[in-house]
Length: 57
Image (tube, rainbow, N blue to C red):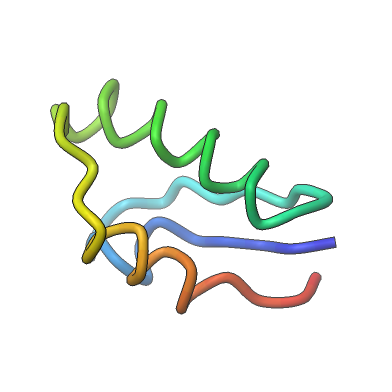
């Protein structure tokens, strides 16, 4: 299992995910980034920051 906390990339955000794979987390975080943070362009830098903050759960 993998885990990610949005607050590790966006200070103040309490959203968290636990998924089977990094790709599942990235899909969920992409939807969250659009709905909660208004991000419509997910940059490679953002993907890298998310990937770097994913931990084993």
